[in-house]
Amino acid sequence: MDAIKDFFNFFADPRVFFLLTLTGFILMIWRRDVFTTPRVGYGLQVFLVLFFGLGLFDENFRLIVAKPDNVPIVGLVFLLLFFTWYSMRQAVLNDRRLDRGEPVEEKVEEDRVWVWPDLVYTELICLVLCSVVLIVWSIVLKAPLEQPANAAATPNPSKAPWYFLGLQEMLVYFDPWLAGVVLPTLIIVGLMAIPYIDTNPKGSGYYTFKERKAEISIFIFGFVVLWASLIVLGTFLRGPNWNFFGPFEYWDIHKLEALTNVNLSEYIWLQGVGVGLPSNWFVREFFGIVLLLLYIVALPVILARGVLKTYYEKLGPPRYCVGIFLFLMMLSLPMKMLARWLFNLKYIVAIPEFFFNI
Amino acid sequence: MTDDPTTPAAGTPVSKDAPVKPVTPAVPPNLGGKTTSAAVAPRRPAAAKKVADDTSPLLSRRHWLGLAWGSFTAASAAALAATGRFMFPNVLNEPPQQFKIGFPDEYVPGVDERWKVRYGVWIVRTPSDIVQEASGFYALISVCTHLGCTPNWLSAEVKFKCPCHGSGFRPTGVNFEGPAPRPLERARIVLAEDGQILVDKARKFQFELGQWADPESFLRS
Image (cartoon, rainbow over all chains, first blue to last red; front, side, top):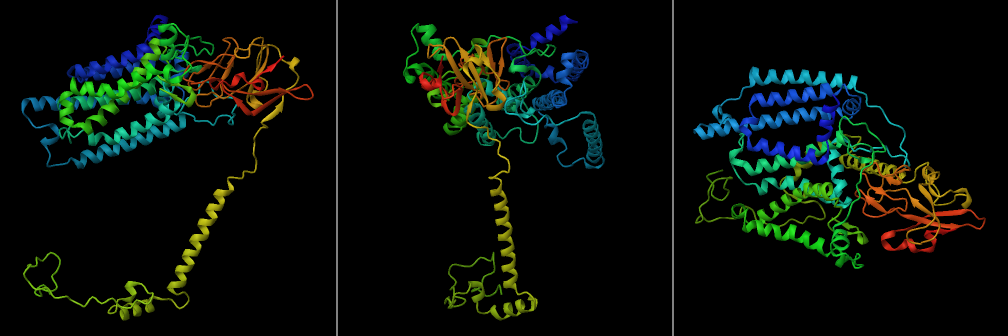
């Protein structure tokens, strides 16, 4: 029994967890014809039911999963998996129809809408079920008020509401002004910009993957792999002192983790060159600034002439620039996370003299 | 009407060759300070008659409007005043920025938490400070430099650890783990006339600005 728990605790290590979500994402896109079979869909749901159901026998697991605050996230795991599976399934089925030269499923009966009794009965059943679930939920799970606010006693761990846990996780890797202001703004502005960047008319009004491979892959990566899995990670795997804990691990407040973080400038000047940190901030952070400019300015140009040449020609310079900037900003999060987990890298550019850390 | 070429109905194409006569001479009437709609000559008698019919004998339209705008203005002013009242709360719980914390010999070496709840400072007595290179006291302000949560002092691990995003600080206040971009701030600490230690949180000293070398950021003993 302990071996199984240790097995799952091992997968809860952030590096393994992220690698696992990434592998799952790639497998899902690559072998989508297998992923979208009912057998795999049911199999994954049954596995999750067994995992959460049997896991409840463990005291530490129960404390986290059955906590009223965290119950929605358990539901989120099931729903997210189902809807991702379902939309991929519809897309794969439509792609097969398109391959055979048939119209997509949504266009077969375009001239009629199944209202009575189909839609009306569905709505009635949904209404009854949702009311029952909400009533039972509000009776069974308590949401008590906590003690009066006290500036001297911050709860440990101090977690944001679940929908902000992805943001809170970002704050661990970026400076507050970046993770709290710039990146959220870019997420919102970027989502609003999607219709103007993505002018591919295909896939409007019907499910398809083949006709919108890049668009759907990027969206699922950003939403499921980054946003949703960070919420799951923040809910179940973050414990006291904001340390990582496995789902079956005791929340030891004295868990000791070597997290000594090092800035890029310290890596270069102290360990690489072997001299002390230069006193002038520009000299000190020169390599970080160069790296940053390479990433934001040079990389889009290189990509436009190389791998993404067809996209550059299809989108045109303005659309390409905005799109690639948003895409690189999105990728900066997993890169920064991995750099922290693997090399204890803190900031690429660290200028605390005027609050500029990246 | 549509047969008349001078007054084409909407949507009726008019030939460019057709002579267009002006319908009415566009002489602006003398408005005399009145609104344009009221000054349109042909509509005036009918409109005036209608208004006269609608007016109740008790309250004319002009008075009713005045009353409505007046009440709206009064209500807005009251709401604004109520908002302004929030700026002056009945209870203002602001602990003093300057306070005495007792005599130096009341403190043993290490981090002292007794003033954390009341004043939000840790008093640290050290045999040798990293900047001043002397033995003495300093006061660390218990606000995380990342996003302002209150870190916990973990005596077993000899570090301050923030529960919000995992920033860690050494007893000196220097940040070494997690996202905090700079060390904790120190407060002014001096000896008062009566021999007690006086801490003044209004004056803060930041390591990254070289302020920990200031003599008032550290009390030598």
